[in-house]
Image 1 (cartoon, rainbow, N blue to C red):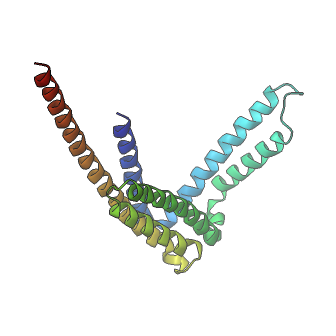
Image 2 (image 1 turned 90 degrees about the vertical axis):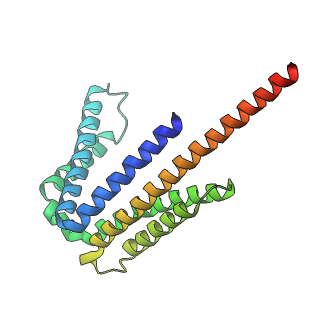
Image 3 (image 1 turned 180 degrees about the horizontal axis):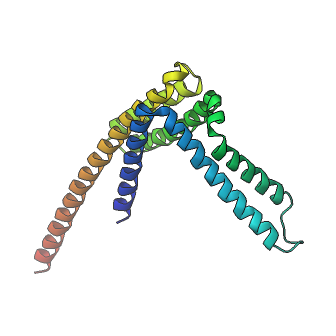
Amino acid sequence: MKKFLKNSNSGIMSLLEIILGVLLVLMPDTIISYFMIIAGAILAIFGTISLIKYFVAKPNEAIKGSLTGALVSLSIGVFLIICNARVKGFLDIITLVIGAVILYTGYQKLENAIEKIRKKQFFVVTLVSALITIVVAVLAVFNVINKDIILQFIGVALIVEAVIDLADMIVATVKGKKDEKNDSVIETTAEDNKASSEE
């Protein structure tokens, strides 16, 4: 059951990566605007919650600096929502942030690949996906590609690596079912042998 939930979560993440990749390829400017609005909304919500917590708490229980943090979070959030077009002017910074997130994901995939190698499991697909992710992230972080097409490039890369991840998940699921089937056959044979020897 745990394995199924883990695989389903990975599958959902891969599908979301594909959707994000397609949107980045088709309408990068619109996606950046939405990204800014969503980020702003999250910051504004956290800022509002922190603000409420500050005023609800007793004077001696309020954490020092929490009001400042709440106001900063709320201000940035509102700014991103209202002035997202102005923020898009900082495309290099946005690309750097996206690249850093992708790089972190690439390192996670690389760790998964190394774990599979150590456990002597099939690792090629995971390793290829990790390397593609890391290369894309490095290109984004160091702004190797023209910034006008970097988001579309990231979109294509996200689609490719998400498809690889889905293939890896399917291979792992099929292999896992085969292993379970073999284990059950071995257990049944062992039980039959035990029963025969007792007779």
